[in-house]
Length: 247
Ligand code: 13P
Image: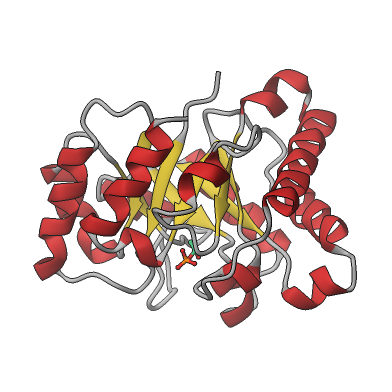
């Protein structure tokens, strides 16, 4: 039985003065029937992991090496050392802005697993890819080429984030989300076996908010959400946690 996940991705947002939102989100996450994960900037991970009780702490990216001459980068080992349990890899903003390809993302995910972090691996098509009818081909390639060889539901989370839905206020229809999530589930089961494929959480991400969270997360193969903008404030993220808590 998969447990729902409400995950927030703060991206490059969040100063220590925003810490109260983290504390409010933590307080609201007590006794909920879903896991709450906040992926904050690296600068906040240590304090968050020390001062919260009910939420998981996550990073947003990691290098494939544990240490070395990589100015400005951070390793999975460092994120773990700061108190994180999760790390996002392969977000479309990194795929596009830093030319991260599936191969690199696979290595990052493997490094995260080696360090004992749970990897949240993001995949998703652009609008052009959707319009040309190749969404499922793109999803299949990103999925199978970005996933480490050995996965379990305990080590990996998939986030389906259509690039055109991120930060735009646009969301796919329920039918479109259902189609892609069912497809990802089938691919996981075909390639990793029914038991493992069934156990992996598949999150939806892209303009999720308090209004649409319940309907989207009620879809059979949607096991929660990866939320950007609406996760930044307690007042907008807590209603999403509550909506996921119902499913
Ligand atoms: P928005 O919720 O702001 O659309 O962002 C989604 C996202 O990119 C989460 O990783």
